[in-house]
Length: 153
Image (cartoon, rainbow, N blue to C red; front, side, top):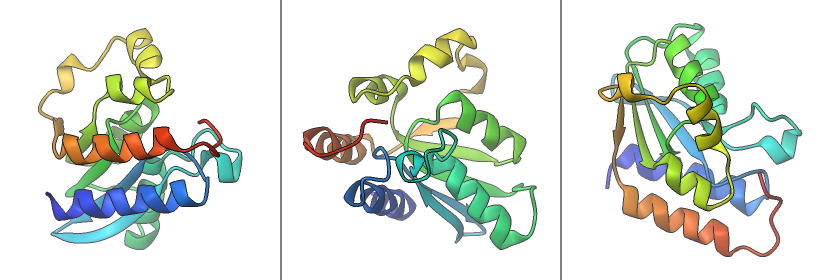
């Protein structure tokens, strides 16, 4: 298991435990050091842009004192939605590693695929996005799905 993906999973569990949002955690790494972390806080903040990747990007920019995250890699428990993927590209993040794919996001009630289809998919970004540790992240998604007292988003 990738050590940074484990930290992303731990981030997601923090959000799940506090009913802050879905099972999405993210970590931004530069030069083998964590420069930003975040988890889904859509429910906590009543803000649909507070996805785990967005929170990690905001944290990394703050910590680095820059809006340019060139040289950074993002690890996230779920394949980024179009909004988060666009933010990664705008921030100049070099590569994204994700655990569960968009199809798995859909199985637990998220609408990423709908927007991805609307925007034409991501075939041109194959080298930019890479799936790792899918089984472990799928277990996280199963834990989230089994919760009875959760706000869906």
